[in-house]
Length: 161
Length: 161
Image (cartoon, rainbow over all chains, first blue to last red; front, top):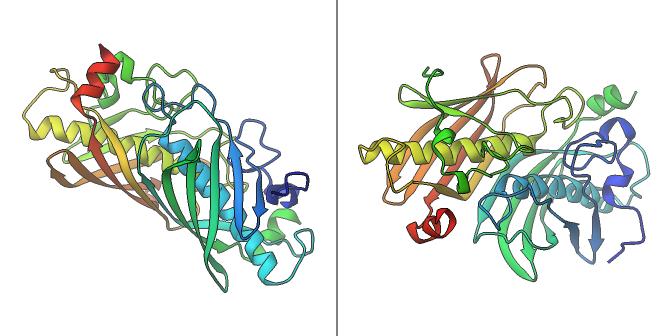
């Protein structure tokens, strides 16, 4: 795992780094960090005690949020990789979520770090589909699927000037 | 709209009212409130300025979270109604999310109150399926679908004593 390198999210341009889920500049947000781990992407996140659903279990909305942002981050990283580009090369590649599917297989215990793992299902033009698992202590509790679409260059230009 | 009555979430037993999305006792959470509006359920929520995705637009993970909790709340209310029971009758009926599907049709502007509307697609035994739209200023930006399953009585008993 390339934990000593910058995360996918560290490469987001400043004006696109305010997302509540993954923006490093959003002081109120989750500020997740995703990395390559071989052919998969990985993200670790420790929920706060108040991120509960029923006592003892993680709030499903938080899990959906993490899947969402780990998915768009992985989509961007996969797209850079598919183009043979470094993640700090210009123009920046960013993705938004078109569709999010989350299947809660069992309650997720609120007692440890969550591990999200992303697999690229498809990279097709401006659309990338990512399959994601969420596990605690090696047990997969949730499966997700993110259909991400690349943000148009003109919108990025408008945002980052 | 029955805004002067108690919300669905006001009826949750105290020990099941800590959910980050809909628990009235979670001081850090969203504390959403859902009501019947005829055959549909309705919920209004004003995002905070930090609930952003890219500047000017609402974070998709927040929207997924609201759909999730409005869905489970609506499932509980629909189940009470299907059984001809008041929502303060015992034993309490609570639902958890088995599956969540969110389709982001267009970016959701971060400048006004979000309106969520739920329609019952199916009530079948312990499973209830809810279709939800999210709109701002009358324009639907997101569609969601929640498959909710009723929490087993033994778990409720364990939680609320």
